[in-house]
Image (tube, rainbow, N blue to C red; front, side, top):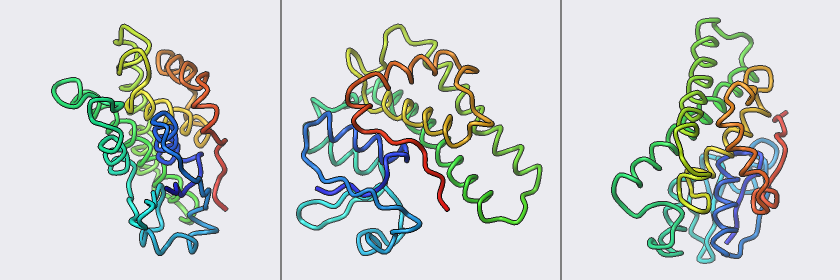
Length: 208
């Protein structure tokens, strides 16, 4: 398998971490969606990452869909998320909150990069959405009794929240300080200390 995208994207990184935890061999192709999009446009016409190219040549797009495939391949009973019930719904909600916040931040980043100016009301609304998303994730972390929601080891929701928190703190350093969300900061630090997080890692590189 080939994983396309740079690890400063929380979406690419969470797939890379899952692949590594599952022990699935893959080749990492850190193509940029800006400078190197022509290298993978044949696999993903949207020119978005992550893109996972299977050995058969089939390409999977969107991190949630990719993780669903990997869970099925690895075994639903051994996946990094509950197979059904309230625990699965809670994990999916946390992932949706984390990835939704990151999606909003990515769109806002591109808007600021390419637009001559932005309406102040739009800027205020978007920044509030990012901060409010992080506040909810902080409350989720604070309400947890153990180190991880998934159990003894981090699951997909734990991974997504940590990846998104780091991405936002680097891409929006002026707006996001993890010290403002202490439970989330502790969650992120705990995750980043793990060997798999250190192996699948990249500082944020602003597109130019």
